[in-house]
Image 1 (tube, rainbow, N blue to C red):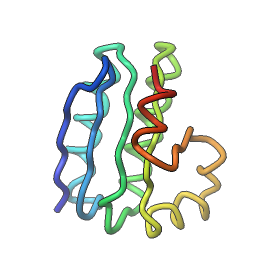
Image 2: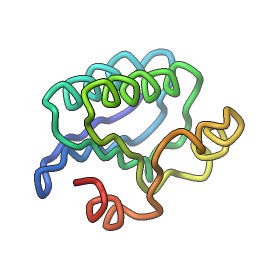
Image 3: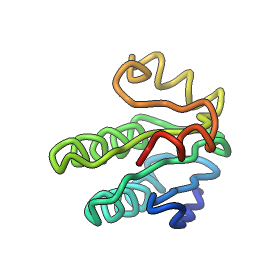
Length: 111
């Protein structure tokens, strides 16, 4: 089960994910991310508390990233947990996503 918390900070939609992003929870994550991207404001996904992410969760991130590119909206990840980063690296998506080491760095550079 994943928890999605969305807050606005300095004009940036910060989406904090915590828990498992898996087949059961990824549709919710997808909807939240696409809603934020659809609002055409920068999106920063805080992944510091993601304990597990599977291919469906990764697909939700990729879809939001592609949607953001189409609308020329900034989409970035921040504080990616070690387990989630391992999955992104295996899929070579660490080269596709903008990944910030800290939330503060992401907020500074996402706008």
